[in-house]
Image (cartoon, rainbow, N blue to C red; front, side):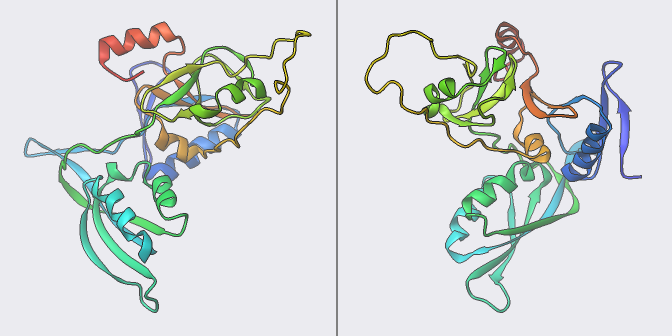
Length: 267
């Protein structure tokens, strides 16, 4: 009853509406286990028009966090157009703060991961739909860019070692990647192409210190729901029976540049 499926712009495209990311995630996970292969775009909230004005859903967000994390949590929520309704000490303890806020549903996308980072995993958070209100303005999206694979092949430790300072990877040595796949998060706010399948030259010329073990940072493993929150408008989540990956809508670099010139979307 809570799921609505509508035809999209193409014959093999559908618009699916549900009750939150978890609801959609369960549907996609069941499809994956039944050997379906799909690509999913960035989810969005359901707006409505009333008296000619656009309205958005507002949710009541309840957060319980340690006192020493209060400033970080309030700064994080303040950037997402939230309004404080209630704040007091948690019953039975003075070490935790209980906060209730009204926040647009748009502001909940990507909030869980940032909340865990800001509180070192010590926060408790839940939310429920409250009502519709007029639009509250823009909400900042993902601040970091991504690293995009330029070649298809097998990931090598040698290539990841050369890119060690560029950011955090979503892949590990031995994984298969393809051109246009999102393989990591860049430490800066722009996307960069990288070659993660580059192999070491097998010559008999060696220099002192060149044969040390490669530095490979542990990959960040994102769940299906976390990937749906992470992607931007020009990206997709590719769901297959054996893997869940993030990719660009346009796999070729020239196609992404052409799309960026015509639509203004960051590539």
